Length: 434
Ligand code: SDX
Image 1 (cartoon, rainbow, N blue to C red):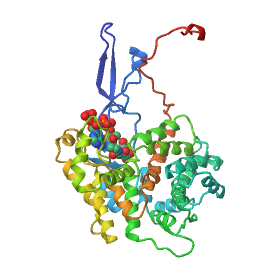
Image 2 (cartoon, rainbow, N blue to C red):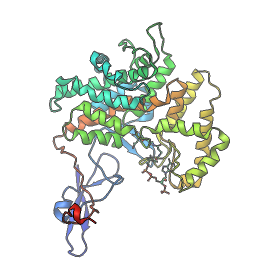
Image 3 (cartoon, helix red, strand yellow):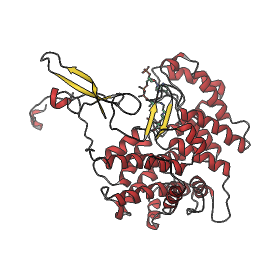
Image 4 (tube, rainbow, N blue to C red):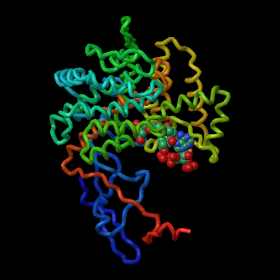
């Protein structure tokens, strides 16, 4: 939506050429300068390597106000959705734009739960991995392999293919994830039980064994469902941008989501929850936190306070607050009155939030700071933390992918560069190279 009354004028020195850039205004949040004519008019590119000042698209899905610590899914505050909604209802909201009525909710839930099983031949892919392979490596491989099995839903231009593919991804990624864990510990795969809720079914596939009945703790299932809600979408983060860029080439949805999984794996992104636990374990005790904080502040060390800081949030990540409350709820349910990891995390947060280094840089706990403590208390191994993030974020990825491929104006993403390599030069034959 362009606001006809406001423009940004860019003038180049020397030749005095100038260009008026229309400012586009969204529903809420910063305006954007429409640069699409810049290069053709002035022959210059913009330079923004980390995309800190770049809007890559327009979207109706998620809004973040980093200064105020606000996160909205289709306009609904994350705090209200975490408290009152369910993950599958949030999935419907993110994908369709409105909360479902009872009939829509029933149909959607049924649609997802009817696709939870994976092709039997996909099982054999697991045998190709070492037992000690990181589960995220398995996720990249097996989710990518889905495009070798669901040939009937690869045409992203076909609305029916898009609908079925999104159902298949939301429904099957938890099964693939749970089987990655079972494979790593040498236990038999547990098939999904469609009579269970989404998070309950996932915990059942993770923890049940064929030899005996297993009842999922409803408090833990509710906590995990809430954790999934918190991780479902987050605007144009690195992995979502990866999915959009892959989708802009017309790649099939399974390949695009596999690309998103690969991008999420990095410790600067979705891998941070695993990195937080490793950091706390390395520090070892509350007494040694000041030494670690000193190391983090020392420019010569590469140490970072994992689970802290965010490109967008320059205030407390609203998800971190909800995560901390959930942490206390889960530990209480499990009868854990004294969790050294939680004690360390809370002491670390207290110290950091009163330290100028973090205050000046507006570094606050993010979604990953407390999540690992909850998951560890629930008996989920550290190596599976980012996998759970991927299970939840699949809903955001498919919603953003669909929004992009259904945009009639979408084009292939193809950034340019500032070239700083050698100027033109002639080939030198081997004998003349000295
Ligand atoms: C997620 O984008 C999203 O929305 C992501 C996410 C989502 O839902 O998709 O929210 C999920 O990825 C959360 C972030 C998880 N990552 C971590 O917790 C890893 C630790 N945090 C960082 O490495 C860092 O804060 C980032 C990657 C999250 C953000 O990096 P930026 O915006 O590029 O910031 P920067 O690296 O330029 O740092 C700015 C300054 C630097 O100091 P100076 O050079 O100015 O002196 O802040 C410092 C950094 O050294 N800094 C940190 C720090 N994070 C930034 N110092 C210590 N510890 C940290 N964690």
